[in-house]
Length: 99
Image (cartoon, rainbow, N blue to C red; front, side, top):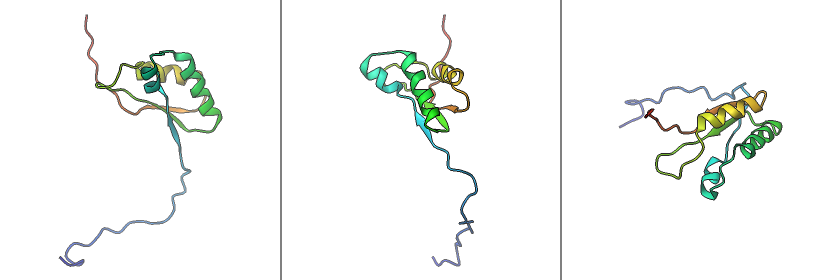
């Protein structure tokens, strides 16, 4: 094949004018490893991350790893404890309600 047969699409290689945004993962996995499940240290972590200038907080989930605090609950609490930082799930395991 020659380059003329399959040309590469043109890309704009100029620098973006958007600022770089940096996020950080809440240490919920470490809590699962240590067996110390508590929201207060995670909320302190969230407030400190915001104070340090991070733009977003992330929480993970897993079907195969040790159980951890529910990411939606943790992120809801973190959003209530902070003022401007965005939140998101790094992974979210589907759950079904059972009685």
